[in-house]
Image 1 (cartoon, rainbow, N blue to C red):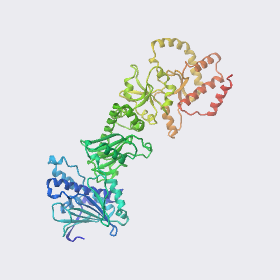
Image 2: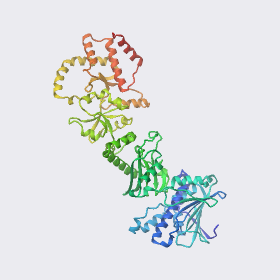
Image 3: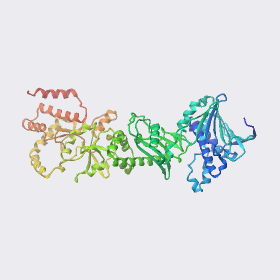
Image 4: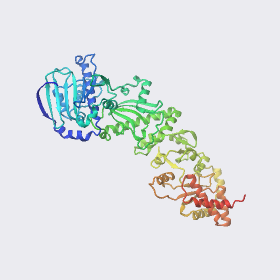
Length: 632
């Protein structure tokens, strides 16, 4: 134990007295953070000395390795964190540890900011302050012994976190740097265990610039941190092998990265990102509890990857790190969620990722299709979020869809470029699978007239199409809408041929529409002549503005809707079955056989669209009635 001269008792700043209790009992919900903060401060001290030695070489010997050492004494219930960095004198201890609002590092940077050449090479160093006081979360008393580089005097600072602290001058000189002694609370002795300390260091401080060593009671030293922060290097200084190795460490999925985004943003907000798009889809990509897997760092010190949305949820397939010196290291992860800087970084990152994906899509559609197959459904979740029109259009522009006119995935821009001159809408059809939508009777008229239809087969498509109505002034329209009219796309010759036929059959069709409506009653909203069916006799449709067929069904299945709205039944008067019904009704009037046929046609339309029937036994009965009348 060192001998001390006269002890000077001081009170914390008024702000410290008010804040300290909050820091100890409320601000930090994760106790591991105290060690992260102290290691970060020690790293800053080493950074400072390294920089100061450029101006004054006498401060640091070339053979002197800057490092951080952790040790424990279980008998005394004490934990020690030591660094051989810049150290502190009496005034530094008062300024840095006696006032939360003060930042020794900030003053240091202010002093050198006019030295342009050197300041450009110095990374922004983290702040002393609130972070130091997280020590009192686990310690009943904190003792700081320190000697500043280039000075002879050594000092000791003590506090029990009760509003006061003491400073004394040591009689004997201690090594340059700072040693922090934490007298641990009895219930916190787990932090004296080497493996507990190692876990915290590798989790939060694995990428700092200096070695972090643990010295056991026998004096044996072991380095705890190991990984280089490759994101801090320039792109041309990182090999593909290094990128791949780091990817395997942060992604926890197989394969190689499909895309690597390594950038340093130096605008109003400074940050570095090293992000990966995996080539393999994680098994839990759509798990309800799945969270983003991008780690947030502040000056190479890990903060979180759980509680802060540094990327939007619809980009949760991204892996990697984001490191920003503009974020406060000495604040809890919970408080970061609503931080303005986090919001700006998220917005900037999102824009960059969307832009890079767009470039990939244009460069190599085959490769982009692999990405889209893995993560397209996730990316489209972003279309359901509230965002400015330009951002939504940028996101939509990188989406790819199946189409009736191309075996390859197409963009909406491709679709618009191929639209017919008289075409006013972007037509689409949603369904459960590609095979089912390709065989849908809803497409018959579009295919026959050469009109392209986009095929949406992911569950998320039902949601974004209910909130997005246009793209670049072109309106979306589901082919299941009852007001779809394809007659304007017919040739003039066919129009003339059909006009006389329609005039002749108008009386009969009006009569049959009334009969269908009478037979089906409240099961349908209305019965109309279809202007899109060619091969099928009937189909279901909904009026413009009504809820889509699949969306309504989804809400019923999720118990969010307890009723079913009647649909429009469209009939194809050119189909042999409908023609037979029209003829029989005109010649013989109403009869039970025609009623059975009309009901069965309605059931058929329901089955094709996946709509449930009210009474399956009644369906079977009507079907058997007709089968019994077939003469073999």
